[in-house]
Length: 351
Image (cartoon, rainbow, N blue to C red; front, side, top):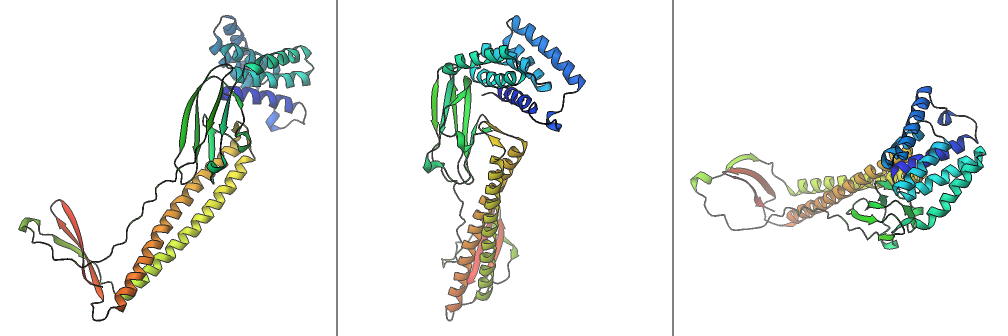
């Protein structure tokens, strides 16, 4: 369903709800300027619709309803969307108009809305988005036309306007699935199944291991590298301490990643409290954005922790190995050199 349809339907429901509760800031009357502009837009919409300019008329009615919601404007917007061929939007708006008319004692409008609802329902096109159990990974977010689709709407044939629609599924640490589907205006039934999202590749840096090798061949005088810097000798004890430090940092990164994941899930659950079948309120959208951001942090920390732990284990192993060798030199030097068109690094000494 198009966003304009959602806005107008929600405006009608808000008008109905405000008539049942005490006045509040959310139900405050529009300003005099908004009421005057809404009336002008309504009259322009009626003239445009009478002249056959249906899309332009629908825009006028939608803006009039947003500025000053009323049952009459909502009913005209629903008629306009029906003529435009946006049957799902019209069907939803007629339902909201029926509630407002029933509460306002307008039996004529209520009957008209009910007739349209009955006539439109069998003509609606529907789209089902199915998420198999295997594809329901942690942090999965399913969206239709950039609007989150809550779990309660999964595998449900939802009325939808004809045209092109985009379905997207994403999760932290997983490749995003995107599908574009074209729906006919009437009597179309389509289903999209979300596949198991593939895991993103995790880059692993292999540890640097010193190996014995034959001396390199002599280079031409012009390519002789000039030492730029020489690292301090790495004794077995220092290698072990470096390994312990790297291992500790890796464990801390894992713990931070777990915390980030927990807060991401909390934010997602908080967002669901302010979300409905085809959309979220302002707080829901903000919480959903927080959940995605924290999930990304959790993934980055998990990857970094894995690299640090792997490096730490390797350094500890090299330190223990070099310390146990009898008669071998217990230090190594790391040298960086510069040659034309290349940077050369070497390790000298033995472990």
